[in-house]
Length: 387
Ligand code: GMT
Image 1 (cartoon, protein in one colour):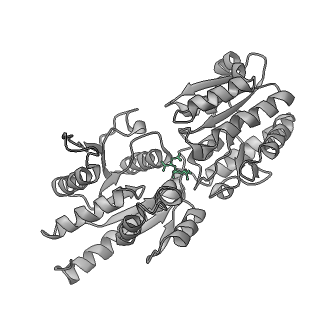
Image 2 (cartoon, rainbow, N blue to C red):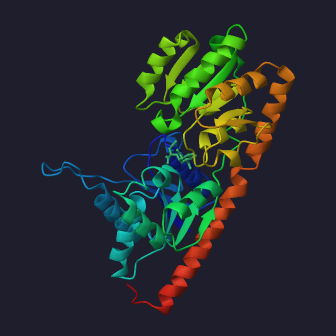
Image 3 (tube, helix red, strand yellow):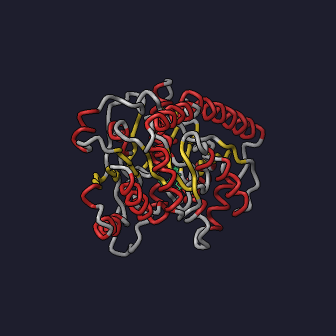
């Protein structure tokens, strides 16, 4: 099977998941074609003979204040589908990928070269951006035009059905983790450098957007540090970073916080962590938290969105109401100040992460691809002139 994957190539969770999916499918012998404007971040780490990358170029012109990426993407889809003889297109993040795929499919119907497309909803394409009235009609239409729709958590599925008039079933296929790559490895030399006096290490990973409530991470850490000797590692970058660094200075904890910026070898850093902090306003799944759990790291999170589907209260960590920094820090201290308890939470975290191991989840996508292609081709034979 030849599969086209369309995603954002950046550090965002949807791009990471799409890339991991492509890698896993290529390992299983499928030919995978990424169509996006840049090489996806996790694709750059090694060479994979079954993986192809097609760069979407968006030429500029003095008339364009906003170069038309969606048109360039639809044209790239048409070319790749025809030239590479793809069987199916899998879009990650509805905007603008689903509407571009709809356009590409309409263009290809003229010659009978059209193929089906699946849209995977990841989170903010529904909960934030998609709900914006500017986009709603196009998002609703293009989701409904998808040949199958998936969501990464039950919560996101329900949220989508509440917010949009969806006429088709939404399949829940949760995000996954590759536990062979994400596991605790011996990085004690790092630990000694970063926490020379045996301090506990807390970690936060995100794109530092306001939805992540990164200032809460600093506030939680300040309270934890007052009770338990600890250090905080901040991984990632984004619009809130400066504000958060300033807050760490104002709160007098800056010397114990390391802002590491964007990192590719996240599992090495997670290997020395004792606790992961994710106090997000909304989080459809929390892939970064799952990757942390796979590295034996328990989770202090908010209880928003799909987080309760991965963080088992009192076992893999704790959940609090959004913004309840006091409760989050109390829970963090409870886990960190007792070595036996910390070890129990760490064991529960890896146990829970294994439920989302890639070998359990990838077959769900393979099954869906086969079903969709079969139904699509049957309908095409029955009605070759459909519009
Ligand atoms: O918020 C991010 O980290 C980026 C965003 C994206 O779409 O790239 O992530 C969303 O998709 C991830 C992968 O499915 C989920 O794990 C995140 O929970 C989700 N983010 C939000 O819902 C805020």
